[in-house]
Every structure is written in structure tokens, then in C-alpha cells.
Image 1 (cartoon, rainbow, N blue to C red):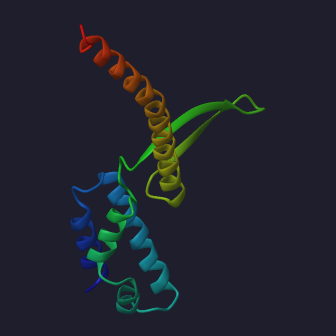
Image 2 (image 1 turned 180 degrees about the vertical axis):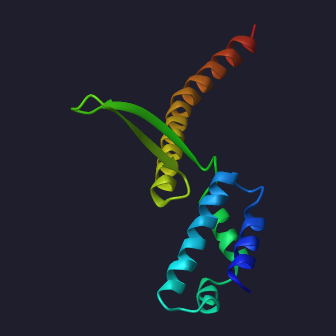
Length: 141
């Protein structure tokens, strides 16, 4: 397998799974990597053997969310610097990272706590209301 075939397989595996811009960025990265390593004295076949199967690389990129257009939620805001230029700042909440998973677990825990507190309040009220309705409805005459 040569560099062109490697990059063609990688492109075909990513095609339709992420945007063309993201695919081009990945192809450019691996192309540059191969060129740098061959310029450093390694043979192309050696570099490609070290990289491994391009299908596995593509699957790893897709599974890890590298380039998935909707894998995270971004929140942005603008901030003016001292020179008056506007800087774009953004926050990304990525649920594929450990801290994203931790945040998801904390949110789920808060929701469950709220649910149990509400049930703890509503169940006694419903039991008392049920007893009152039962007594009123079926009281002896």
C-alpha cells in the first residue's frame, strides 16, 4: 500500500460520516505526517505500517467523535480586549469526555433527587386525600 492508496481508503471510510471540511483536515494531517516521517529518513512503507490500517483509523476517528459535527454543544460569547478588538470565546460541552460524562451523571442525579423529593411530598398528601375520599364516600349511614 502506498500513501495515495492509504489516504484514498481513509477518505472513503470517512465519506458520508462527517463533513468534507473535517475529512479534508484529517487527510491533510495524515498526508503531512507521512511526508514529515519520510523526510526524516523513514521509508513510506515503514510509516504506513506504523500507522496501521486506515479503516481502523477512520473507525477510531468516528467512534471518538473526532469530526462528528454534532458531538458537542457549544456556547459562545464575545469579549472585547484592551485594544478594542472583539475576541470570540466558546465553551464546549462534549459528552464523550470524562468530564462530560461526569456532568451528565450529576445532572441525572439532581433530576432523581428532585423527583424523590417531590414524591416524598406528594405521596403522603395523596394517601391522606385517598383516606378522606374513602371515608366520605363509604361512610356508614
